[in-house]
Image 1 (cartoon, rainbow, N blue to C red):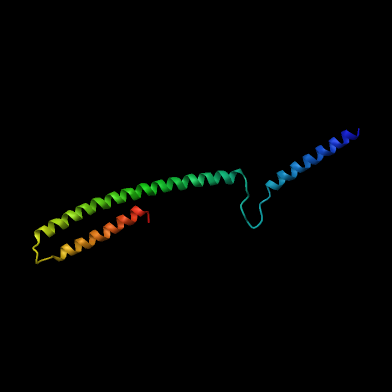
Image 2 (image 1 turned 90 degrees about the vertical axis):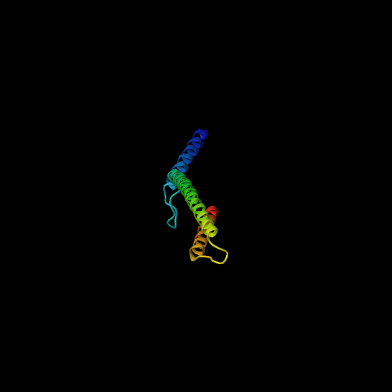
Length: 117
């Protein structure tokens, strides 16, 4: 009889502890922090997936911009070479200087994009 009472008491305490643990999981944490549960983990997983997709899209767009800019650099460099070939050793046109500056700015932009900044 004594063991039945002990068993009943143990079972009752176990059920009470389980109920308290279950209730504690549904209480929001102090200081306005979001509750910790499976939904938060799922939300974080979805957020991470979205961030990865956005990073991939940004990298793809950056690569396309680099390609466009390098194509433009090639065109400008070819134009600059043609202009320099047509000029004499004593004359350097303002157009040649402006084109060189444009190439310099575009090359810096490509370099920054390649660095990811």
